[in-house]
Image 1 (cartoon, rainbow, N blue to C red):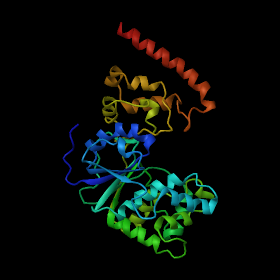
Image 2: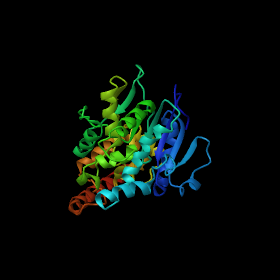
Image 3: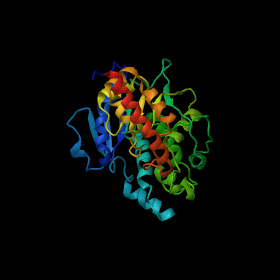
Image 4: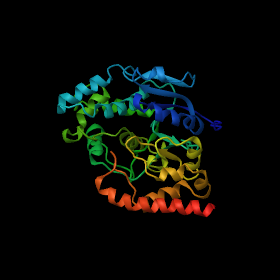
Length: 334
């Protein structure tokens, strides 16, 4: 795969758990091809480092050594002190790492990119006017804004959500936001992440009580108007539903005819539609968008943690239609 002729490049920061490394390996060729990347910064535990390929473009940073005091153990300790559980500590920790990278970044900006999201088309992050670009999509979770109000006194400023599988951070602006959070003397703690955990409402802390993307996006649009512009990318969510667990590069290139990104979320489940996606004959006459529409038409939508029991009867009915469709295709070839 040849790289795109980018005019400027960035650090692409990617937190990766060891168990997610196989999926990330599928993603990396597309990251290097379709993102304006200077180097890939992998944030993870020490157990992942030996698995990384020897590539001068890949830099490993131990997640517990990015910033003094910001460790998973300390996040767990702070959470347990408030709600007597640290079940969601890892989820908050990876958000703090994405923000904290601003304190060590030596470039003007950096991109955070989810390891399970494949960029299947070239994606730029600045427009012709020089503005950085936010991706937005419809979503709303009230606790994110309750926390933001306590932290920074900010209200929701955008109809859509800034939550996506990636974001470009202006390094200086991100540092300013973290400084502003740390200057909030109404909250206990010294570091920004301690104050964030203190600002999350108690009933939301054990769930989803803070969003780094929602917070930074709102802060940037409010405090520095004109620095960013919003744009919607065309992303395929729950790509495993129609592509299976490990689509090959040819299939992902085909997806790129319809979408900018495809999310291969680990809690998504495969459906029999993956056999169509794997068929070169099917791909030659159809698009990934058409296949995804087929999934929605027949209501083949797996639950987040597997198949919902209520979906089985409908899936079995659809399964018969699927088999008849394949038989008809085979007959037409004869």
